Image (cartoon, rainbow, N blue to C red; front, side, top):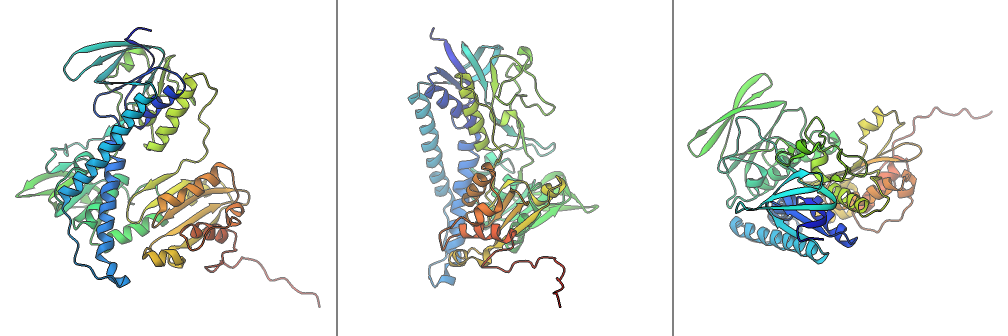
Length: 478
């Protein structure tokens, strides 16, 4: 094998790309990863990890402001946000460095530059200095280029007043006010993070609900807390344009048939993501894309051209790093000759608002629309001794099941992202509600609430009242 020839070439070093490279290396496939920016992709550099670090810092500030209810007296907390950003940057550096080390430890190589397919097995790499290297893959090329933020016409980011999530996680000062266009996951996560640090936040969402697609029972808990902190919500609203006004921005909004203005120091545009497929040479090679520009793949992540695979966000939503991890492992194993394919049943998702939301499986509305005889169980955090002790009583566990099996679980509340794993396992194992209800959970824990919600679906909850069954009285024999 020549210096410019590899068994596999992975284009993109984010969660999908680096996972594919590591797994390929474990299976003895000599791999080159081509990344035009930093290894780790959106997730490690300015998405999942940096945002959650800032969310953790904001949550700590929030707790410190209210510890007096526990009898703890402390001076009013202050935040040096520039120092917080340095702490966050250290986490990013540590993780991205670890990923690069793992790729190399498993026999992989990393090339910095932009990649373009010149054939099904040929890749041209343009380095930052303009030099060009041509490499070939004996087995496969894996497209793992992820997605980029979608732009809203008229609100192109300038990095100062009009921001995307990328700039929003790197601010060195907490803005006094923030208008967010898009009340989806990223908008609400970052908006509530800054709100807890003292920012006045207004959310402008085009549909009639925050966090579109999420069970309204869960969203209401988050929206209630957001508004209690002074947040303003404009749903069914459309941002029309903006203009500077001194040190602020004025956003024109169409809401409820009336045009109004929203003033803020900064505007965060968070209207979704688009796949990174442009400039890769996919059209020239014949790789088929779907109507939204994602690479079309089969259940083994093969693209339409033999020898070309695609994994992660570039293949379509939901745009989740853990989905990308799993897809990359499957593709790598297929390339290495293993007989595997996509086979999961449950794909959990977590939203790091305050409180957190986590879901897996069907919502109640989806289950009813599918024709299931639905049983719903709920357990409020206000009935949890552990939640009371933590001072985290906003939230609930909601279970959706039928007579035969579990259909879905939604959780809103403290540590929802950690609690959902049990529900994902139950769904993957085709469990019935009874299986989880009969499993002894430790006391006192938040996980007891999961068990109680399952019991409630069966009419057997202990720590909350059960709904009375709708049965007719039975006439007794004389």
